[in-house]
Length: 95
Image 1 (cartoon, helix red, strand yellow):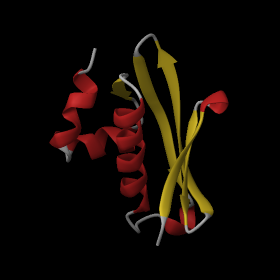
Image 2 (cartoon, rainbow, N blue to C red):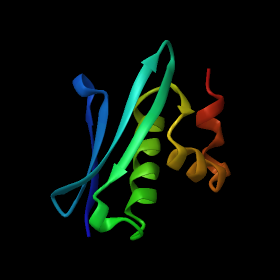
Image 3 (cartoon, helix red, strand yellow):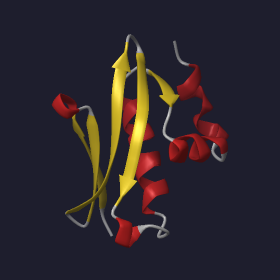
């Protein structure tokens, strides 16, 4: 399986595709130098398959690689994911 994150800047959204099919998205709001991750969603038929976690990791990797924004997790799924992945804490502490 091939997964890709695409940033739709004009829509404040990252979309997540798997084998060329859009299966999820992450919405955000920019506030100064912070990116507030407000909502994530995976196709209901694919929930429980690990794609949500894969999407969050891919989105955070993209934010890390492409920006210097501080991540503010507002989406409960992202909050929980970050709790289990302390190696990503530096994204929450950037200024």
